[in-house]
Amino acid sequence: MSTRIYALPVEQTKWQVPSGDTTVFDWEYDEGRDRLLSLYEKGKQKQWDGADRLDWSIEVDPNDPMGVPEQSIAIYGSRVWESLGPKDRGMIRHHLTAWQFSQFLHGEQGALICSSKIVHTVPELDAKFYAATQVMDEARHVEVYSRYLREKLQLAYPINPGLKALLNDVISDSRWDMTYLGMQVLIEGLALAAFGLIRDMATEPLAKALNAYVMQDEARHVAFGRLALRDYYPQLTQAERDEREEFCTEACHLMQQRFVGEEVWRNLDVDADECIDFMRRSEHFKQFQSHLFSRIMPTLKDIGLFGEKMRTTFADMGILGYAGQDIEVLMDEDEKIAGDLDKARIQQVDTAIAVGRFES
Image 1 (cartoon, rainbow, N blue to C red):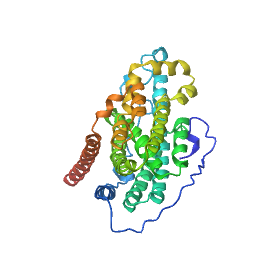
Image 2 (image 1 turned 90 degrees about the vertical axis):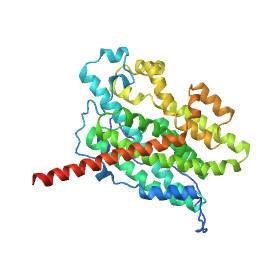
Image 3 (image 1 turned 135 degrees about the horizontal axis):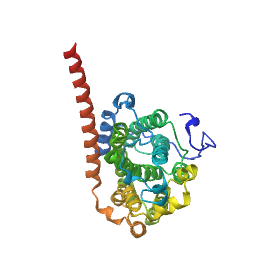
Image 4 (image 1 turned 60 degrees about the horizontal axis):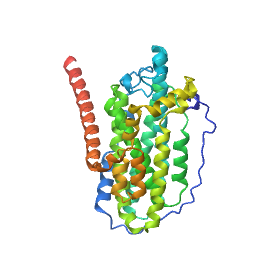
């Protein structure tokens, strides 16, 4: 994607992060954990082609790219929003969507790097197998988000400083489990919740389908991280688990602060400080932020990183209630929704073919 469509200057197009990790070979080809190998089989079977599965002929209105309710706009009800006319409100919708999808894109490239890193650092062969399928998944996600921004929005934003800082920590850490924890559990978990909001609220069919299909893949990726870490973390000392909880608490605070879209408000010059202050005080926005952690908390609990510090952090953030959610049920629902969309797409194509034959 050319840097010409970025709303803000991109200071560097290539970002280099030293990782200092060790490549691990595994010569035990006969053994493997059944659930991870089952996930690997599903990963092979569920591959899809973004050029064919998504209908890129759909026209997208830049002034209302996702067709979401006005009430879902972060500054809805503020003095700034009320003072804007239809043209400026459309511009804000355009830039907010471009910013959001840009962060998805940058996060997916981070996931591509991390999953390729897992292939050569994780010690077990079954995990290497599945991580190899995830590399292809993440490449596809980078492809489709980049294409959506380039062709449909014709606008993009650079990587958010908070996301960049978190990716830097995850990629530069030489311990394989920290790559899993930072990417598969935290970043992917947060993305799943954000994708889900678009999938469930958007009325524009391309954005809706794109996020639903990506979610189908991401649900497997989070499951991959859970399975690997649930086996590994009981082997660590309490001090080592405490260190990882500390990393998670800092990362969650960082991600919570990230979703105010400061770059958009300052770029558009629409009383940025007032917009950000309104968002931080808005009950609607607080509920939105809380929902973003709905996938992370039950996963951390499942892998055994839910000590006093972690519970206190989530209680302070006002989101402790998500700890009781059944992550398996959520993942199954993601699979079902994407499957239903795909069946509807196939049926639509078959109907069009049948009509064509009848008319001819």
